[in-house]
Image (cartoon, rainbow, N blue to C red; front, side, top):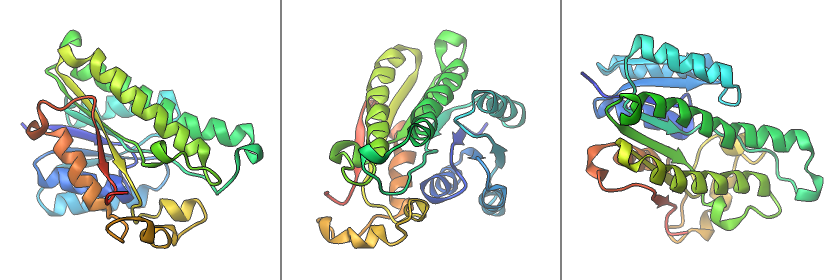
Amino acid sequence: MKPIVLVTGGSRGIGAATALLAAEHGYAVAVNYARNSLAADEVVRQIRAGGGTAMAVQADVANESEVMAMFERVDAKLGPLSSLVNNAGIVDVACRVDEMDMARLQRMFATNVLGSFVCAREAIKRMSTRHGGTGGSIVNVSSAAARGGGSGQYVDYAASKGAIETFTVGLAKEVALEGIRVNAVRPGIIETDIHASGGQPDRAWQLAPQVPMQRPGTALEVAQAIVWLMGNASSYTTGSMLDVSGGR
């Protein structure tokens, strides 16, 4: 039986690359999306074309009832979960803290932090030996912004990723004896369309001179780190932050 992974925000960017690579490594993949069903269906099509097993599953991770329904659909169609990749996240337009309104802050933390908590909660109920599961792995997607702070652009986003890192460490210790490993990747400047959603489509290449390797990373390079953390090759790794940042 294939191991099963749920990738939130799996229809594009790092999430899509992770879904495709996980399928190549023998996982059955649930590709979560919030709104873009066409993009998710395309990822599923590519996986199936390669002989893999995949399904698209809609849920806004900021909506608890949608998350719970998503996990139930994955249970019914694919079976018991082996891994969760908490990748779904948003960024907003560049803005100082003294210009941020409450709606922006609530949206940011609901998706980037609360969504990861609720998804992890549901995954633990299925994977933990305490709940009758056989173990598993959770990989959270943080950001180098958690270290840099995002000043003058998106301190809210950086703070949400800082919360994810604390969450990763605490949860890893909490479930270490229940067969679940919890780690995070910390991508640096990666060339994906998340920059366009924040109003800066060329941001990755504009910032490339600040990177010791003088280029942005690719979604695949982050996905390779995620899939390693998911699998048995990282069996003694938990509570860790893996930088994928070109040395920045």
